[in-house]
Amino acid sequence: MGFNCGIVGLPNVGKSTLFNALTATQAAQAANFPFCTIEPNVGRVAVPDERLDKIAAIMQSEKIIPTQLEFVDIAGLVRGASKGEGLGNQFLANIRECDAIFYVLRCFENGDITHVEGTIDPLRDADIIETELMLADMESLDKRMNALEKKAKGGDPEAKAQIEIIAEVKKALDAGKPARSVKLSDDQKMPFQRLQLLTGKPALYICNVSEADAASGNDMTTKVAARAKAEGTQSVIISAAIESEVAQLSAEEQTEFLSDLGLKEAGLNKIIRAGYELLGLMTFFTAGPKETRAWTVRQSAKAPEAAGAIHSDFERGFIKAETIAYTDFIALGGEAKARDAGKLRQEGKEYIVQDGDVMHFKFNV
Image 1 (tube, rainbow, N blue to C red):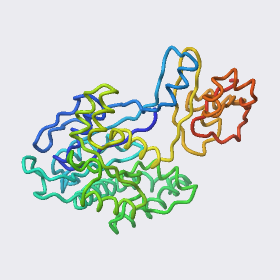
Image 2: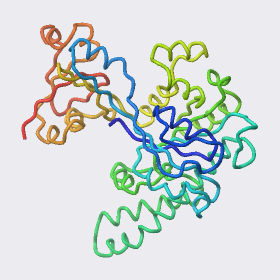
Image 3: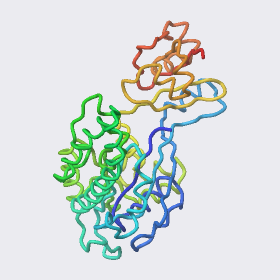
Image 4: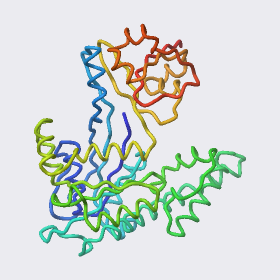
């Protein structure tokens, strides 16, 4: 698994249409009325990576297994969702375990598609979503406090640490700021993550535009980009309508279709790249005659952590990693020639994995 993300947005912004297109399924009903998605939908997509195919070709692998991105789509949120308005609030629990939250914002005018707020304003919509998520987080923290206070009185140091973090988070939420705005020490990061706060997760803004604006955006996407930059995050411009068409085409047809529209790549690729950057992730590979496979690991991960992405036993019993840089692997034509050229390295526990490394782990449990 690469990473998973929750897709949130107001009704009728193209959220479910986008979900359908990105996952190439019709798992989520898309229609021109609020709350048409009445159950959380989960879809997985392969992360496109041309390096994977090139490695597999050299190794003549029987299987090619890409890493995956999981999307969790929930019902549209509306103003007052935290108080029971609409249906979206019922499913917020389904995205608490996600690695990131993707805000889908409507950045197109279309008189045939109603907007729950009556006008098109992506910044206002983002504020509504953020407010509802913050209110849900405050409710979640209030529910936790009684149990934590009891544990803290009993001398539980972890409970005391979490209470301190919650106090800082509540200050931020009360001031109208998301939980991710709180400055944390290294020791506080793990306890903070265990709180599973919706506004504590990295956020990416997805601007859904008309086909005409897919290549260059518009005034609304410019405003969203400015907001994203101010918050230290990113925004991505896509057209759900275009993605719906792309999902039905072959790879060759996709390239021609996108080129005709002045687009270099599908929106899915842009979202994945932005997501990896947002979460600080990268890819390494394992390769052999049976399969060539891509694995996702955080940037700056050491070799044992990468081994653990494959299996916990690999990390626990880690001995060493045989490593070849991707460029060397391709230039020399595989493992055997890389070994002969002295480009296969024996790396230990302190080795920091590089994006594209082709690795084989030695372990003993």
